[in-house]
Length: 251
Image 1: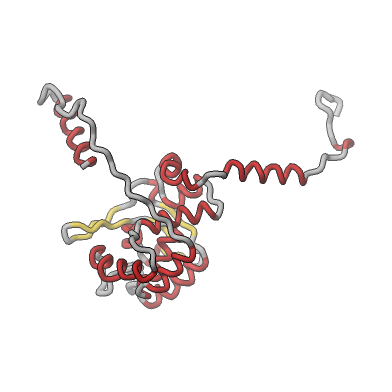
Image 2 (image 1 turned 45 degrees about the vertical axis):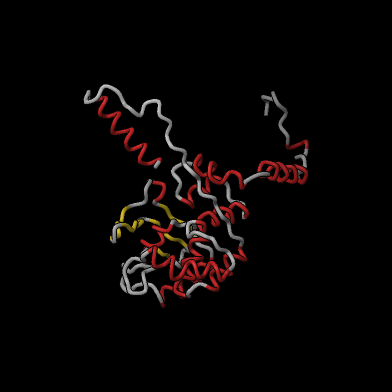
């Protein structure tokens, strides 16, 4: 509804600019409120539980989503050349949207979305097995294809695989997108700052990252202050002979 309002408002504003109508009838009308979906975050143990019970074809997908933060469409579009196991990195260069019985491939929605993501070794190990057993063959094969080949079908995946697995792992209700939130939460707990998190998730700005995940970062200022305090207390003054007095121009 909110998107429909914004689109209609732009069209009507353009019509006013072109003198096709005298006034935008939406002027003064409040836009519909956007209901934010509650984010859910899994712990490391819960991620491990979900990866253990899901169909083994999708075990690596759970780990990549949870520890690399790729969006669902980015996971579906991921291809073999974009996974570098040797250098432990994934290049995000495409995303796919399913709709009307078709799949539409496009670049990430912003320049920041096109990125290289560092991959933890535990995910590399899972991907190495996955690429050998479940990924499409060929130099451009999909990493996470449907069982019959081609792009995954979200509704089929959700009904046949995802929902039963989340119930079995005791983490339901859970959306696949919640694993992206989980990645952010776990990265913050591991010490990631806003800029690192922004680059990992492919956000267009650090402000967006802060707006979405800033509530997970309480106490970071105090933590930095404590670290500075420890470093300062561990330091020792330089010997006086090595200190150049301020204003001494003869040295």
